[in-house]
Image 1 (cartoon, rainbow, N blue to C red):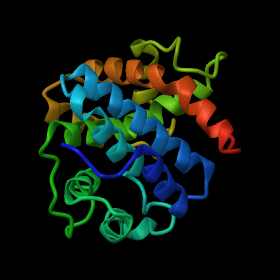
Image 2 (image 1 turned 60 degrees about the horizontal axis):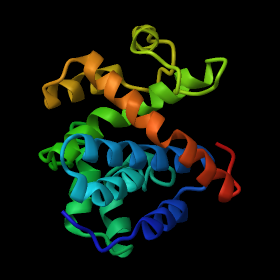
Image 3 (image 1 turned 135 degrees about the vertical axis):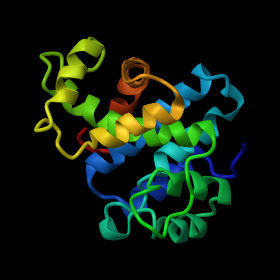
Image 4 (image 1 turned 90 degrees about the horizontal axis):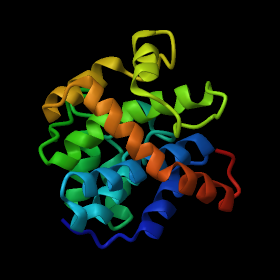
Length: 200
């Protein structure tokens, strides 16, 4: 799959509707994670498409939190996104709203559904480490944080578990791969945030 949107255009759209640095950081991180997964899973020629869908997946969350993934199609169409991008973005909210009928069908959409919440959990866990990084994080450490429902309570454990099941992976495999994916882009995302004048 291809998209006419460039990475720069996608980031511009993300920043148009998201002013909080955390939301920009999350979009860039999920984009980088999906790009890693595309190459890991044999979709290297679609890596840019995967990344752009990751960058834009929460485009409407800051301004329209009650209409998350319901306002997104309008914003994305106005920004020039194709229907494939819109379907991917909306599919990560499948089950959240009865109006959303786009289920995660493509492997990229299943990865987005599974990894979105997990990147938040990994990011929160990384901040608690002396290194403040996921570079030295192990799955065993992340599992402990996963089991502690009070830690990063906003990261849905149910969605993470459902996402792993949709992919046919066990939870440990999803965690291990997503840690590796975040390691691959952590430094570049931080550098990009600094270049934008935003604090990661």
